[in-house]
Structure formats: C-alpha cells, structure tokens
Image: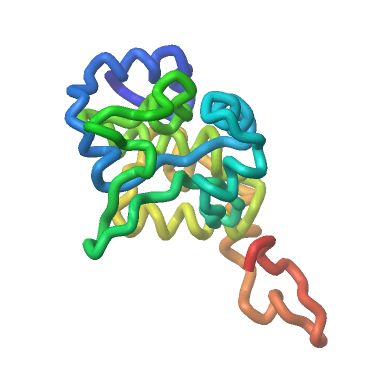
Length: 180
C-alpha cells in the first residue's frame, strides 16, 4: 500500500492485518496516547484519568507540542519494553491507543510519519516545521503530503526566516517556541 498524509484512517487500520504479533514494537519502546484516548484506557484499568497519567504516562515534547507517551519498564539497555507488555501481549489491548494499533514492522517508517502528520504536527507552528525538517533530514520517512514543499509556502517562509535574534528582543521573548 502506498501511504500518504491523506490516506484515510480506515485504510491505515487495515494494515494492522500485516502485523506478525512478534511484540518487537512493544519490546523496544512504547506508544503515544492522544488526549482523547486517556479516559478509555483509564477506565479499562479502573483508574481515574489523573491516576492513569501519573502511573503510566510521561509527558514529552514532540514537534513543539506536549504529548503523552506510555512509560517503559526500567532497563539497563538503551531501549526498554512498554509497561503494558505482558507475556508478549498488550495488557490494554481492548483500549489500545491508535499509535499502537497502526504501527507494524512492514510499514513502520511510513506509518510513523503518517501519525505525526495527522495527529501531532501543527503546520502553522514555525518551530514544529523546523523540527519536522530536522526529523526528515535525520532519516525520518518522508511520505507524500509530508515533504517540506507540501506545506504552505507562507508558513515555511515564516518558519525558516526566523532568526535567534527574533526570539529575544529588548529582553522580551518574541516568537519563542511554546514549550522551551
């Protein structure tokens, strides 16, 4: 399947049938959880949303946006298992986040970019566009709709014309990234 930014979610979900259920995606990392998915997962675990966030999620910044990622088990290795992986199965399978539903070994790079483009990246945020450029230049998979030339030219011009001098002017912060 040819994956683009505009590939419909129902088509993306069909790719899950290619999953071999090897557990590698969960054995080496964890997935992202969208704000609207928190309640369902918390309910499955008989927790309120705040308890669930505190016990199982860590907040991080991705493309200048705060996002939640499922915690991983402690490990001495540079990678670690998802906290919900038990006997090579997902403990929260009935409420599995979209990220975890769609990522599979056969299309992982394209699906990761699809997810970022459709659920994380704000194309109007100049700092997010800069980070997206870094992601692409450091090996992130570019899919149609996610190449830099696919974005609005005015937004790109603004994102890449900002200089560090514009971030601080006369001691006042201006055009500063939201989360730095």
